[in-house]
Image 1 (cartoon, rainbow, N blue to C red):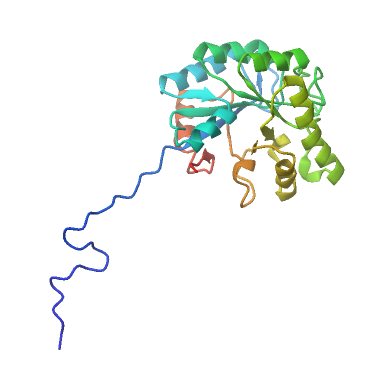
Image 2: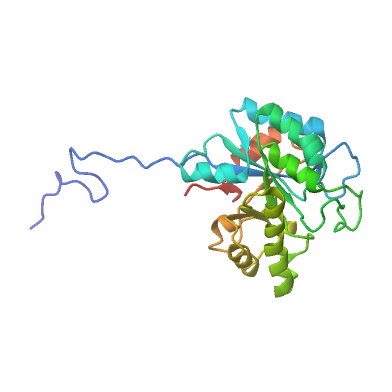
Length: 263
């Protein structure tokens, strides 16, 4: 006997009258931009400098696209509410003095904020970790307090810009923990964020950052499995990034693993 199945729904089809639930579309991927120095210095062997004019155009492009630049702390808080749409995390590594003199006025012109990752063991010093290239001054105590007063997030880049994956346990602990305490004492507020020097990290480094009490850490590429918010990927933005390149980077953020996914 052959059963008559002509009227029966296929296993992969809903029964007649059954409402079909559409798959929820993924929310647009938020992303975090990575900057360093903002100056007109033409000597840039490590591609870490963007001119003030270029930065102004990039921030204006974001504004025209309906995007608003915010600190990573603000971006993560918005993501927790499901409200990260239209936000871009803006970060400035190394804590160059030109962040306050040049970047902050441009950010405030657009109504943006940002996170600056500073080296609390080199306050008022220079980028001595770079073997060549120009010496650029770093933020001092007054500069850090001025950035905080302007609404920018102050976060840690360690003490002296060392590769944490090659550091001894004692150096790793000191770089991560002491830098947080020093910055909290300077600003009078909590320090939520950390940024791995050179973008280098491993499970030992992420564990140290967690133990030190940070709430997130920025990397470049995604970190080891299970890193979560302790290895947030970022997109490098530099002098060569025209509006076309910015748009491509924005659209490809998720495909290349550089998006800040929803929680």
